[in-house]
Image (cartoon, rainbow, N blue to C red; front, side, top):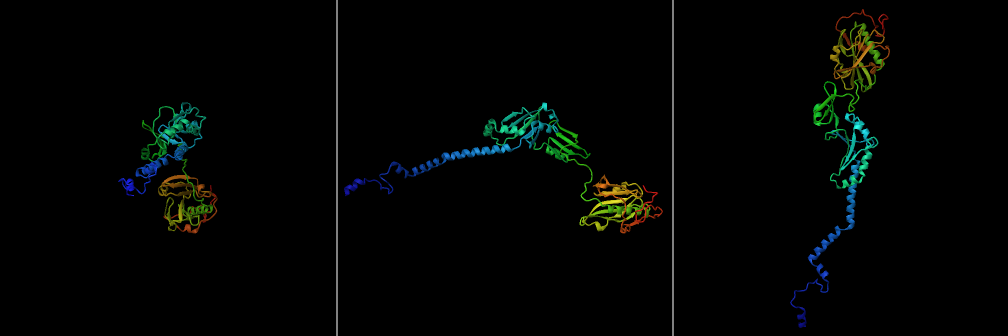
Length: 411
């Protein structure tokens, strides 16, 4: 027994419990730390080199490229000429139709025979051979589907190229701006914006077109600029016309003081009652003469419920006109009316408005329902009037109710 044991135990180290004397070299090596690390690394290599994964990555890359190409295709082409840059939203128009449109701003484009077109899209530059028969959108789409454009798009660093539509007549200046033509209110804004074409109103009442070039600024008056609205001086009512029943009472009141006031002027104020939706007439406290009225606004109508719509005063037997005194007094923004030659069946009526002290005449029919005279005026209007100087009752042109006209003075 001892001898046998000695043959087996030759002084070697104790046997590892996990040691398999009949195992293969591979099995034995796999149990070492080094072989475990190598196996893990090989497993990672196998994971990253999966052909299915590589196919997915390729598909994703191609999908991203197609998505970017679709985004670029949706961008509108750009008109670029003489430092001006502007999107072309209607791509159905032909190149020649675009030339005609832009000739308003660039007269040198008026002669189509002298104008040639090119389209620059990424690295592709194409000449337009038939400007009258080729639409801008068709030209853009043809380039986008061409092999030259697609190959260049794959290699290009710029994945967001602009499709530039360029006319050419002579040498042109370079530069860009998002909108090359704009309306401004003052020269400071014009200089700060640096647009190629600027439209600006001036103190002299004119509108000017300013063109900025490398040579300097060119400034001329402009008429019919398409950027400006068609505006005419006048009054656009937001309220109904003053009804005829109020108008005839006003005329009767004025006629009363032409007779009993010996041709004295009188004043009435017309308000719009916002609560009841109707016009009301007030005779303010006033002191009158043949040529003037001094009055004070009634406190009853200072409430925000009432809109002071019109001042209306009489010129008794004189013609209807606005005097220099009226010009000085009638500065508030509202309507003003004067009535004259009240002895006529239909008096003379002049109406104007003040826009911050700037006057403009209008047709009285724009604000009055004009009809014949018939209604008397309220007694309380008459009670508000006092005379500054004695007057005579000798000028009996009108009856007490303000309606009758002497036949010898009519017309």
